[in-house]
Image (cartoon, rainbow, N blue to C red; front, side, top):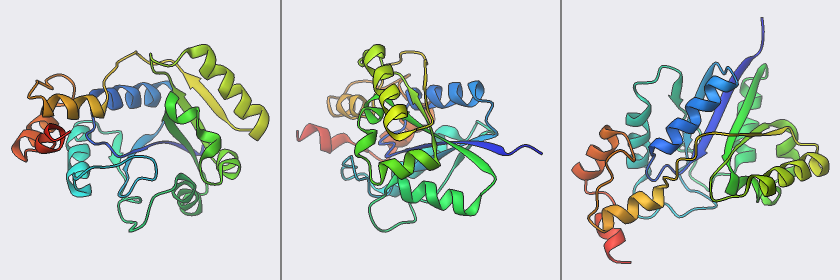
Length: 207
């Protein structure tokens, strides 16, 4: 029996949007994964999560993936009281599921700084990385950096081309603050949740 293949997508998901979902579906299909876990962070090292509670970000993520049988929520980072580091998350998975291959999905911006992550050298030895492109990052520069990581750290890391969908969580937050529509940028259930709970309204208007 073959080892299972599980994709991991971590992030603040503040809020989750269609770009995240399309990226995840492409990776799932291309790498023939058994499932893909969305791992919302509680306290992110790299990003501010604003005043939006972890509970709200978790619920929006849960709503967004509810219709996809091979997407699941993982609470491992939410259950930590301290800041979240990828090395701790990956090590926890490996300790519990020793016969599973994990594929951590990151964007171009994260890949270009991967060597600066906590215990980066060990991390790149125990986890496979899939780097998905973003239109604002030249693919040649990104591919050169991926090759550098392979040479310098013996990393198992691959570049994957996905559709260039330039939607970001910050864009959605800014549009809400400017009283603009976010229709088609995030699933309807997430859009409804945002408006029902008036998330991001005051935060962006004060900036």
